Image: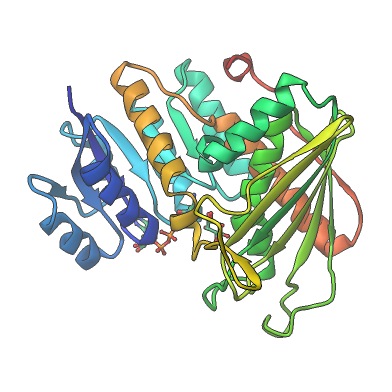
Length: 337
Ligand code: NAD
Ligand code: ISE
């Protein structure tokens, strides 16, 4: 059986996901596309045999030729499309963030609860990365004792002009926030954002880098060094410190080259290169689950919790204080798996 997927938002990641859905993965085809930039959507549709071009997301969701939906438009537009998919009873894969405010995420969780089943999957692809998965297996296996700390770094080479200090938290660090919740199987209870010396490469008034401290319910502390003007590469790091040892992500998935006086390896250019296989696995797993009549992956609850923690981080960025994370009670729908 082939799953017919409609894609809303065909910008950078939308096009990358269409490439993997059409050329890399199996059991799926892109049957419809749309974008607020209709010319862009038309150009993409022209390259997809048999795909329908829709002028709005609502039309695409209502199309009987669309079995499931991928939302890759800008973050503030996600809520509308995810709610429409739930109302139509269609499975939806939504790129992060699930939505940009706590209230919007609440509405999505409430709609899914009213539907009585999981219809939403959120694009936190690091959970599918082989290195992160190996690290989690060591931590949960208990072979090096109880976890105490995690050190993480999320360095982006550069970002467009519209990027702000707030986005270091809610666009970039949101991934580290999801990793922390998933790695330790528990919620984050406080967030403290520290502002180190400002990089001279950051625009005036732009705090970069940031040091984001996440305190987990068990007392484990995760420190995330986040920056978007690192210049040299897309550099993602992680190390969990446990009572009897440590476990860390490898420096590079590629080959290590040693020559006179130096040791070197490739550092990825961007998130597309670093997480290419994670994205592939994330999508194939989702396609298989949806084809089988269900869903899989990070839930609307995970999207809600990540957005609330980001909001708490923004509060700390402004107050310079340690801020408590206040979550609603976790509904039973999200307690399994
Ligand atoms: P982009 O600006 O390149 O593309 C977004 C597209 O959405 C544009 O073509 C825009 O015209 C379209 N769009 C905007 N509003 C719309 C609306 N109301 N209806 C339909 N289309 C609309 O942005 P991007 O980098 O592709 O990011 C898109 C989403 O993917 C964001 O939520 C972003 O956070 C997420 N993202 C995730 C990752 C990851 O690592 N998982 C990486 C990059 C982006
Ligand atoms: C981007 O939107 C992503 O999600 C990338 O994974 C992240 O590393 C980058 O910082 C974000 O801007």
